[in-house]
Image (cartoon, rainbow, N blue to C red; front, side, top):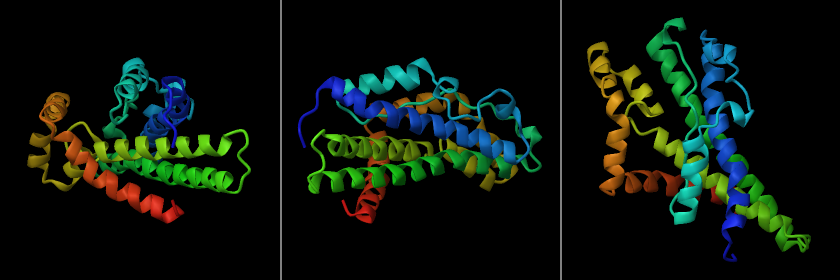
Length: 220
């Protein structure tokens, strides 16, 4: 593949990043509404409109900086408001709400893999005079990357990441309470893991395994 300019990279990554982050948050709100908490729905957050979910730093600045630096790209949106007391079973239902985000990223990664395959077929069949097939390949690979990074990152059981909600639901009440008290320090724990060079390896193993399976599934 050819070396891309910064503007080409931005053009390729913009839609995958916006979709990955927007649908992740919308999925949380949608599942919450189905389980009895209409908070996100009433606030207009169960929507595919990215403007409702954009965080200027996490959705725009951080992905662009990472793209310029050449590292793996990720980001975040404004968290969807959830009111656990509206659930019949708060711990269990919060786990379902939490897992909805990473699951949406997995489904989107599959969709992007299929799009990359379409681009490949257009290219090899000689119907890519305008470069659309090549664009679809790059966009598809970007979509796979951002969605798998978000999925794996969010499944790490560190509060307030989604994986911590699932783990909390499985713990006895006393342990769950103590575990959830780590939430104010979760960002600093993640930052420490990143600085120590531990976060990358934690993400890369599952990421590469799932990416390889997806590409094999679509024949790329």
